[in-house]
Length: 434
Image (cartoon, rainbow, N blue to C red; front, top):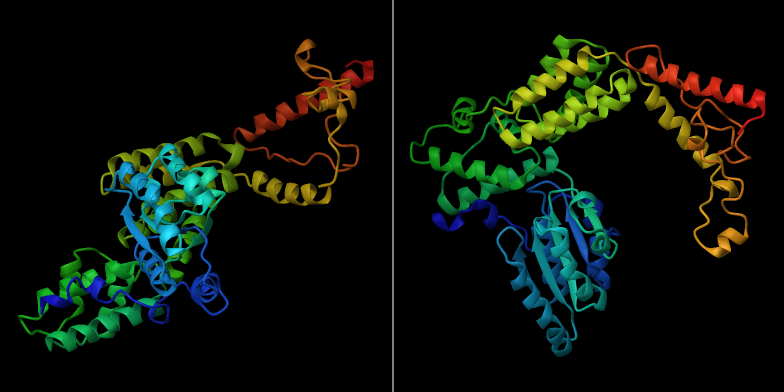
């Protein structure tokens, strides 16, 4: 009986045809299938949440392309061990004619200076680096290394994917043990919701329920599953529409300055098992999209909440989300920065060929200076007004007054400052100064 456990390993796909999910990568004509069919593999970073198939797909690629490979986990492996293997990679390539595939799980755990060790071997083609990470590579990985890798993003598995995996797990258990778990639809839904797009979490929970139920030979009910989970899941689905509908409801409640509704949707998500960092990321966005300069302190409150939550963790850290949510909902509102962002993208696209005025180009070398760089530049701090009428906008740009602040909160002060500089420049123009 025990030979089927852990169930997640027993059900791990061994080929691309049995792999579930990530169709944007593995479907016919997509990048991974093209690599395998063309027998040509680049160094890659697989980025996405746990249990979405990053490690499994790496192993499938190596197997189907018949490449020599070795695996490391950045959480437990020493960099010296990895360096030793990389040095031997050239010998392996000389003997086999194939580069060594170096699979590094959770590669972000190597610091950025340690990641430099991979660079020369990737550049020479001695190794093909396959790294997996649950963290955003843009923040966790060396840019020099990233420039030599292709980042492929993995997404949480859908309810359809998870249901297929769940029923496959139930089938394997029945075949191997003779025990028919016979899960009611409501129990299946609970398991799918609880797994939050993570196949490993789903199968581990199925294994626990099997161990708790098969000896008693009692039907598996909603109550028995909830007792095993010991978590108030409700009907929240972190993998599908619920997640985005609830975070949207939370966002709209904050925008509408409704403190009660904000708290209600916040705790619907927290009690449903949502990742608090997912909520905090939306809160930080709210700070500029819906509050902006009306209350710039809101951003600091949310960043402090994120830092404090990461320090304490759950459940103690949930209170910091409550504090931030109340602050955001009660703060003065302004979407002027959000409007400005859309406007400036259009302006930048319209004038993307506009030249930088020569007088504000830094004459960093004699060639630039010879062309007139820096000639006529006026240093604002040389004047008591701390500004001049020197033109710093390209001649081609006709529009002006891009930012239109509102009269609420601190943004009223921003508007007064902008008007102050406008009046100073007008007086200077009238005097012909600067």
